[in-house]
Image 1 (cartoon, one colour):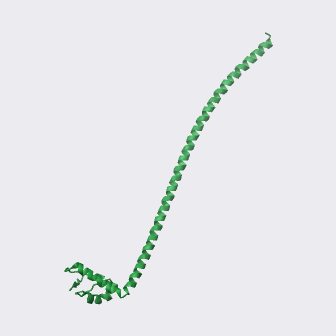
Image 2 (spheres, one colour):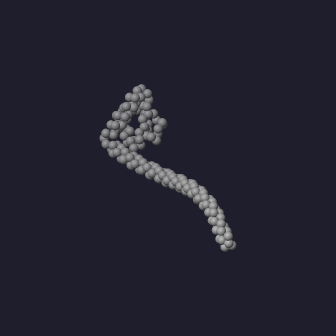
Length: 166
């Protein structure tokens, strides 16, 4: 073999050996990079899942805060409305009662209540209290129901006088 052929053969052999060595190293690096890529994808998926869970938990907490706040606001509103309704109801009932007190049936109604109380008490002593607004009816009721020893039957004097029935 001539020197040129020997050089050519040496060159081809060296290039072939270097190509094989480069191919093996390239395949090794490719495998490492693929493994790193797969590990990165797993870590990124886990991180994404963790971030998603944190976001969901934050959203739930925020919704719960808003729900609680709205629930409290609604309870306050309901309580306020109930108060208004109660006030209106008592005002209306007071007006109806005031109108009823002006009618001629009111003294008869009181007389009926007193008779029921006297019948219930049988022979026991009873105390009958009148509302201060009904003080003007005291004498009329005493005559109708034959109550004696009345003293002052208004609320301010409760317990101080004991009216008795005949």
